[in-house]
Image (spheres, rainbow, N blue to C red):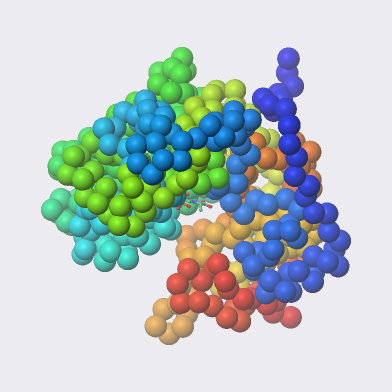
Length: 457
Ligand code: F0G
């Protein structure tokens, strides 16, 4: 059969709000033209994030009912630990309430004060946790990863030469650990090849620097390796994931992505000393090591979810869904990071609305117009999120101005995707009418969450 289908049927449904244009205009005004400030009951299709927005399976719900809520030594923890060990192979498994808690603990264990932590591209919470501990987060994405319209198989790769040069420049004694993020979320959800992971490991271990993977989307990355990298065609997704982890000394995970659950995370490591310190911090800040701030039923959902995320038919549907949406948009000429990423489509706002300079927030103007037209919520990843001002108050723009359409896992049907595509294509056709924006209020840190904006008339 040529027609690809969702590899599940629907047992329980959740109504979505259908709103009018006039209502949406009012909601946007009330939200100060910041999609983060919209109430989700006013959002028809929510593409703000793929994190914690997964639909769980009946097997996950069944496992949750059967959880053991013991504070210590819970049977549910051991189920979780067994699955995480089988996939990652690490000696110590430390559960956390979400990914950033694992990051916080990791950077407290490694003394990063005044030191450098390289990555292909740090996610903003990873960067935030390093900087909060007075460390310096440095990004080395490969060159092709910075050019949206250039197609390549592994645009998430680390620039190995830049990594080597940085180690020589800063000195290995000033690099307590190195990281790689799979897939590279901030760079468009692009995959990292096995060869690149191996080379990163080789370079870091030559200098005695520990290597950790930010592995939120490890199953999606493994699927891309199977599809695109020579020698992996006949390996199972589990085998590929196991090989990815085999090169690392540890990993941090936000299980809200490829754990196919609504919350959770972990820190894994082979280092006994790091594990001991991490567990002490965990007890003080998250919870006992056999639950780490989670209800034990969440550990049950994750033990099942990790396995479901590794199923090839699920991944073919998942990545296929993102590709389906991307192809519809590309046919209509919508500029984006090509090829599509694993968890979403990243529209290139610079080419979409070239008449709006970065300091007038083209991505935010596009997000607002998509919502106004359709009730679809997307997120700006550009000058609102990462823009800065120099000492003269002049806008410093990030490399790319993007609008991310993050696709929640197992939530929306192909018909929903057609609706999303129509909204974006319509916005693109009328792009010349998109208006410049300005900030009317902003918080000191992570301003995008609460920022207030208006159109410049
Ligand atoms: N690392 C990466 C690559 C991420 O994408 C995220 C979260 C985290 C770490 C932090 O995990 O949210 O569980 O604390 N990304 C979400 C997103 C929020 O929308 O991309 P967390």
